[in-house]
Amino acid sequence: MAEYHDVLEELNKHTSLHDKVIAAHKSISETFPFIVRIAITIYDQDTKTLKTYLHSSGDDSPLEHYQVSLDDAPSLKAILDKGLPRIVNNLLTFEEGHHEHSTRIGRQGYAASYTLPMFNNGVFFGFIFFNSDKTDVFTENVLQQIDVYAHLISLTVINELISIQTLAAAVKTTSRITHLRDPETGTHLDRMSRYSRLIATVVADKYNLDDAYIEHIFMFSPLHDIGKISMPDSILLKPGKLDDDEKTIMKTHAAKGREMIDELLENFGLKNIEYIGMLRNIAELHHEAINGTGYPSGMKGNAIPIEARIVAVADVFDALTSARPYKEAWSNEKAIKTLKSLAGETLDQDCVNALLQNMDQVEAIQQQFVENIYG
Ligand code: C2E
Ligand code: SIN
Ligand code: SIN
Ligand code: FE
Ligand code: FE
Image (cartoon, helix red, strand yellow):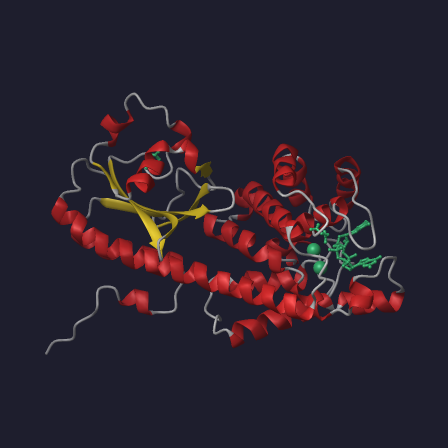
């Protein structure tokens, strides 16, 4: 018998989610050449927003780094409310009389589109878009075949997202068990992960960061201080300044963090998570300084990975504006002054600018995730 190649064999390999979506698209377009793009948006339950995540076209998406409240995307909300996919065979007609300019996540610049909601055990987690460059192509026969691909892609995406959730849950449980009074819980992590995403979005063009990268910064940044789990309470919760010996011990939290991440990945069988190098860098390198005075390795400038530079700014800004066992919360004005003086010295100038130029969004994050006595 002649050798036969599974048309979707790419999906079996250990490649990135992005490469898998590209492979699925390539396979679909052999049968349906009019499908010129597959795009995925994911849903943030906390803020009820949709965020662009991945797409298969090589060029820049018309809507890269975009997010919209589900309530402001009525035609997408209708898909969810009805529980049915949406077929638009002529987007030019569909657009007439609509004012959804800000909500056109998946269809901009295309002639027709097919949109399916993605669910995991009944919980909505995003949409998948198939865009066509021709009108009137989504017939029932075509849709039946595309549905199979859509479900495969949806499973691949959820597999990735669940791995990260598992890791985050493992970290949370580990920290609960070892440190019932961990000072860095709750709203600090909510805020700093959103500052990190904000900064990443602003510097994305300069550093060539795509949506999936930005989303991973958001998901991974709350784990930056995982190494603090191994610090004794006498240091971690000390109500005053640390002495030199205590500082030396505290500084080991960075390298410890990386070791703990490696151990968790090993123990939970999660070593194949995409972008896992980013997480290691965030845990280990978030206290490196641009001028080389940071720890653990004293790297300088652009040698420090961008994810670590981004998280450093988010972490310091939130540390300054939050109460810690050793300090009161500072006002935004005072923290802004300090950030300006640190920019170009210890903190990355672009990342500081990104945050300070978007104080309206910073304040919105602070209002949504308010500090309480429990952190
Ligand atoms: P953290 O509280 O999450 O602070 C993160 C970083 O924010 C600090 O890294 C520092 O760069 C900045 N930061 C926080 N508070 C201040 C401040 O009052 N002034 C200025 N200029 N920067 C501030 P750093 O210094 O490497 O500290 C790492 C961790 O060590 C801190 O994480 C905290 O858990 C602990 N730590 C640092 N200093 C003290 C202290 O005096 N007392 C106690 N109990 N813990 C401390
Ligand atoms: C919408 O239709 O409201 C946005 C989604 C899309 O662009 O297909
Ligand atoms: C909090 O902000 O959530 C608690 C105190 C801290 O920042 O660690
Ligand atoms: Fe830290
Ligand atoms: Fe922190």
